[in-house]
Length: 321
Image (cartoon, rainbow, N blue to C red; front, top):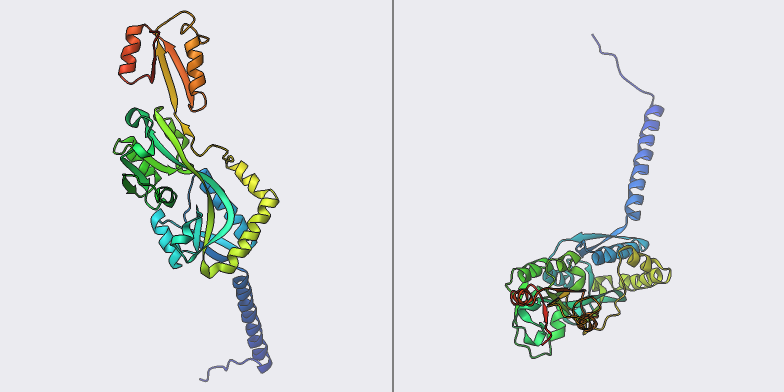
């Protein structure tokens, strides 16, 4: 028995084939259009989670988005990030000191002052006294902390410098007593850290600006980005972001030192220490008010006062003799 022949009119076949071609063409055109409009990617080291890092990341994100780019981040240790960016395996660095291009010639500085920060020395004044840099023997820094390297390049200091993977590790070494002091960027020190020990002394060694860097293959983009950052500054967007992340301008003297909480104890002497208006307490507050986070005092019998001072629980013993 013969099977029935399946056939379609020639015009139907042609129409169907043509429709398929049109649909495929439209899909291909749509895909090409979407690809053409997709933002290009810039890869930086990071991201960070401190207020300063979040500020930098949001500001750069806005500027790049306005130029048709989006940011991606790759977690890389600080010291390694310079090498990766200079080689072109990273497109750039979020924010670094202004001297980076001196050592890494493939990096272009975008000349917009994106952030100011303090290089701070932190130590326990019970251990290192005034904790002056020229009297310290052993300190810790994050590996790749170029700002500190720039500061001591021309100083004849006899320092045993321990380099660790990051700021948190450096602060851990300080709290465990393995080093006398730590030198870090202030924006990477949590405020809660200063509450751990009211004997911390902080010296501001320098106040420096940070800049954004791009690999030289993005030279044209660096110019456009500089213009866009200036535009965001002029329109007030930068100030809004600073306010959002509670970043205040730094007006501090670079040689400023912060002594933490200073406590004093004395016996009770009429008019001198018997009240908050006593002469000795007025002098005490006037001396330390500028450099101490907090000034406190108390009165006890003289024997106990001497014992507390000798045990290190009180910073200053005020005597009448």
